[in-house]
Length: 358
Ligand code: ASP
Image (tube, rainbow, N blue to C red; front, side, top):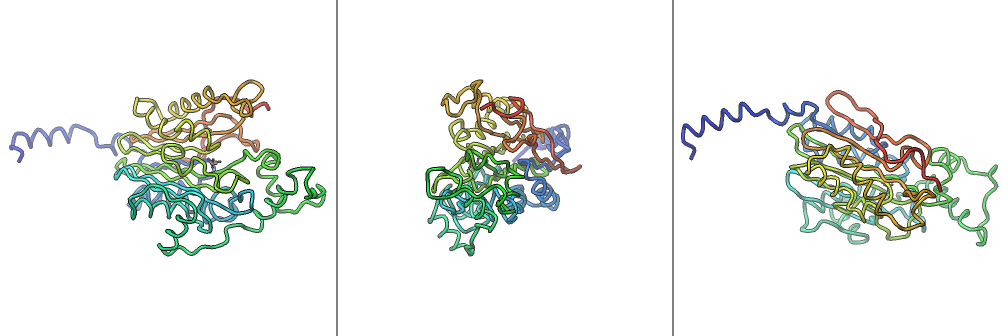
């Protein structure tokens, strides 16, 4: 029981201390990878209507998971080397401190919704492969073919171009299927020469009272080895949320994000007082200085791959940074932001100009 005096003191302190919403008038806030403009818009609408930030984040990400024309996430994702689409996703909910994830999930277009069920209905954090699929079916998800016609043609073209010494003949450039042409227009020819090309959606959200959540979803590395799991479903690598500090996520070379615990490191750096953008840059500096494998370095000893980190803190500050200013397919690196004012793309900070010099 508080005495009357204590009660008055507490109420006076409460009146004097600005609420989180007053200190961070930009809330609610959503930040996502560059492919996530529609996702952040959706997440903000949901949070403005009172939704929990995790539900808002998942509904935002589901736009790309459901979109067969996005070839890096969910339905329509580029398949593995055997032509099978295998999806990875994770979710983390700040207020409850819980997380869920699935990896190598086949046939279910919304892995992030399955990840949330892992979080809510099991004692586990990560389910993989056939076990994850069985779990999804038990929750009423209906498996479907996730390989679209376009992704199948792109995969076949990759196979035909793998080696000049196998029995697959490369099609004449003039005979290229329009879908393959279209893919090359969007992603460049690199995915066929060097399957380091990737794509993923990450979204971190802060609700009206600063409560945090995050979600990351991907079809992973193009033409990956069957069963290869990237950073996206690994809590601490592709996603980490601490309700008292901030939320962060990563896209790009998953192996680097796993090795350097990218998202968790970003959150820890924010805990030490760094602005989200500076936290993202510091994670990238660690990746750049800690990558020693020659085949992953360019002629100047810099990483020859891409990684982008996204972060928000509980005050509504946000930022994103990329190893390289320009993506593997020649576009400036940008990230998506939405707050009560607008939804927009902003330029990522970066460590290195241009593209790696291979
Ligand atoms: N990080 C994802 C992975 O390694 C791919 C990407 O973000 O582009 O699976």
